[in-house]
Image 1 (cartoon, rainbow, N blue to C red):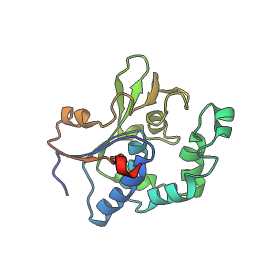
Image 2 (cartoon, rainbow, N blue to C red):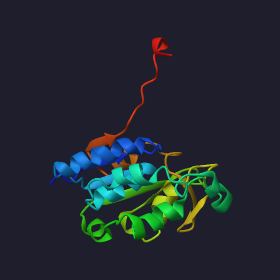
Image 3 (cartoon, helix red, strand yellow):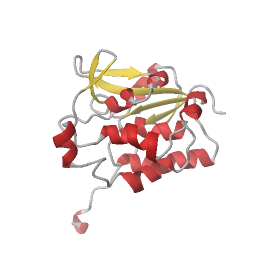
Length: 196
């Protein structure tokens, strides 16, 4: 068991979530569960499988579902005003296609913080683990990318992607009293002039 002030901080950024999926599997292999996790956007979404101790689930999501038009496609934009099929991702997949273990998620003794930008204030609104209910409204709001997704409504807030206001939620973790942080980020290298 890690000390109480150890925190895992997860960035947003779409395909960067592919990288964190492997990091979570390595943590599970080593028996590591953080007492505090702060995430935005895809970081918050991917943390769901980690907290529910479902090794490999995020990899299956990426390999089996990411390329499907129900998940990402222009048809969604016409039907739902969103490039992403959030109903498919947050309802159909966990309820019918790829089991998500809510019982383990609820029983895991981890504080889970989800950030989404409040459109009224421009600041990050924070939601807790108990806000993760069927439909995943808090996580869904944190993943609502401006322009390609509609504004999400949750708990009286109008919300968009948490990465807009807090791309790496380290300050929230510090404010919450954590003293040691593992920050899961993936930086892509720029091509050198000789490689262009």
